[in-house]
Length: 202
Image 1 (cartoon, rainbow, N blue to C red):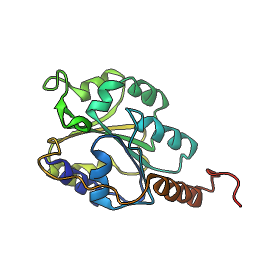
Image 2: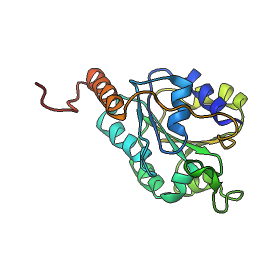
Image 3: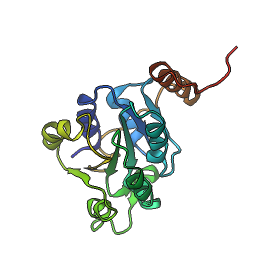
Image 4: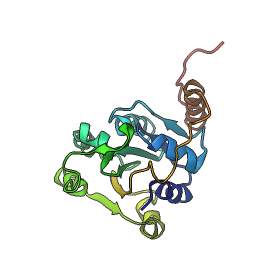
């Protein structure tokens, strides 16, 4: 399925989830799909740590529901994140692996062993029980609402099998400065949780 269409479909099923978008194309694609500048954190230089960032927020604020995107290029840099995520087993965290079988951040350079990499098998091999693979828009529309239902018993790992982005859609630049996005997101988290993120204010 097409990368941007998959993100638009996910956005149609989003309710009150906090989203962490990662390096590569997911920041630009999620911006195009959602135009969200408040409840999404665009972690553009995440270098495989987007889900760890989300896990920290999920454990600190267990009432929040989080979706964290990670490309498979980033995942292959640090698959050990799954060990930590499985051990934490946070029911309010969903790791969405965007599998385009390429390094999207480097003009879709080939990902080693790409045709044989079985991300669902890797996740199950680490003991993750809630593992789902979505290959089509129809599967997102019919299966994702149940996957993303509230009060799930454990951490969730979802693989989106998509085509590389470059030829499908020219990703627009996010038209807000990173610092402004940080403060919009942080202030929103403060508002809905009562947490003190930015500390002393004049």
